[in-house]
Image (cartoon, rainbow, N blue to C red):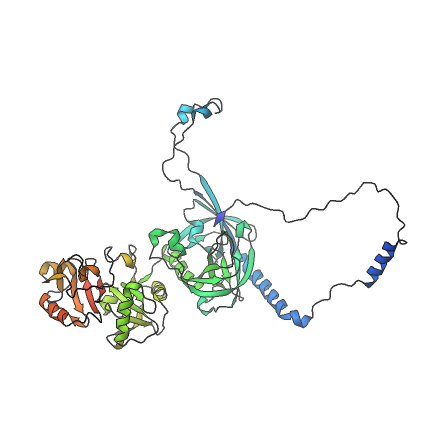
Length: 529
């Protein structure tokens, strides 16, 4: 979305001509040397030759293809104008300096104005959208209509229609609005998963308010996980879904919410953002893939909100782990994991869908329904757009073996917190320490602790105290945590933990599975330098 105020520069060169002046002197036309030279030049001049038709045929075919797509899609593309109250930080009240009081119009008492709260300002903006159904549903960006008090949609035939906001999804920056009208033209969706870098695409929208603008380019890259939404909405940090198509088709302010289409005239993306130091096109634009947009759109229309799938796990990349997890991933490789893709399960909610199906902290998920995924973001997105109650099959690597675990996908809680906050604000860093002692006092699990943690008595050992500066403190253990596993050994008591710890090789690293106060099972890696 962009401000409707525009600055224009006239791109022309002025020429000055004298139409009614006089000219002193006479010229005998056709007899001077200059005139004879002009006649010769005219006789020998020739126009530029036309390019050979065989040479330009491929380009001409492409032009015809672009025109055909434009004619097919243009009536489904709309301009969206919004009005909203501008946010004013703080409680601004009118202060009238003494020197300006006598400049007020007659009849205005400055003392009455002094201290009055200033009226909210009205903000106007424009963006784009695409009609996606015969009954008037329009897909656009959340940031186009967010906070709007009035939404007006202009169709290609000139009709201006009021629109209602059906639903918005800040996590993907998508929104659906609706108009009521007859004789609408709606666009069809294509399969964004089939796109490849190099494919031609066309971007439609209203850049800088110029409606029905089409630009051409290619898919430059797929799967760009750029934190654009999170940067504009810090409260959503760690909870957004930012999987973008990258294109060099020109996208400018005002294009937001417009469609990106393939040469079949199918919508394969919703234009959302650009990378630019100037605020205008710089060769890099980002579009939300149609397969992601469709799920969000359908959910908004059906429920007024997005209902997402949920497993109840915290995951980390295996191929590109964070610094705190590199030692843990190295230990998995030593144990025999040789996969070149997959995600490490660091946290599991025992009562969540994955926990109830038998997934454990320390497992590596390598496939979902027979398909591999490159990283954490791809698995998150696949699960999020899987409907609740759907059964999925996860291929899991555990303790040197691969097994399949069937999981019934749950519903993502509306109060879901980012994974980084699930450990009660604690930082679980790699446990490098010089001391061999762990630095904790453990107790058997009593009835009270068992009820609080949901662990049966006779399983686990409760952390009673943590020595400051110890190995346990370094890895984030806290009083109340319950250690339920060391490497492959289930813990049944504090005494058994002590015996298992004696045989642990800190130089290779030790994996602890810990149930913390948030009810999650966390994988903690401890290693001695």
